[in-house]
Image (cartoon, rainbow, N blue to C red; front, side, top):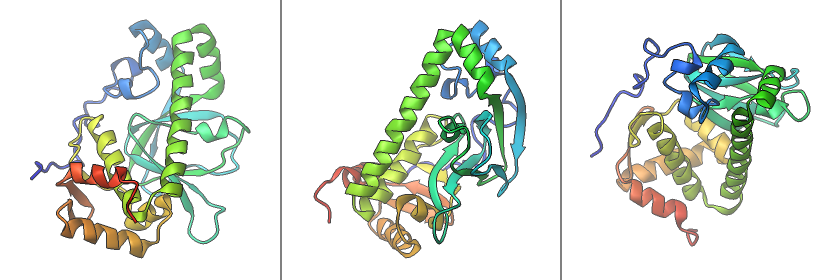
Length: 250
């Protein structure tokens, strides 16, 4: 069985995380990746403020003018479409080291809203400052383009999962993706806390709540996972990977 840890207490605790980009333990997951120490200090200089976002609080709304991008330092947020019929459709879940606000770059306004799933903290950088500094620092501009490309690839992957895979495969892909993202941040890849509800998972995967609950129960009975409220242990990751990759599942 995988060793269980309390993922509410990450390797990078709030107390030990430094404010400046140059000393932040998450800098390799965020925008300054690949920059020199001197360049990172220049990026730190354009970070206007660190903003706390309490659980259920909205970071930005759909229709708001997009002036800033936000790097998640601590916590977990979701982005959703408030205009979708019925329950709001969730576009994504975002954790420490990831950027929010990219949706507003093209049209100048945000096309979705970002809401904290738990008490969180973000670093705010105005897009204008980022553009100016990017012209002076080619490495920063290249990194930003890489982030945009990664988001496009992620969107394509999500469309492929939702369009071509079964409900069982969708959930397996989702759990494995979370596992990989937690691992890259110093958490256990096999034992972590789900910040989102099963209803929210269903909204993201295009599944009904009843289907998600049934699949969790099925995975547990087959020995693939263990669940205690929102704490999840992936007891058979290879089997989940086989499910995710099997194109013949019905």
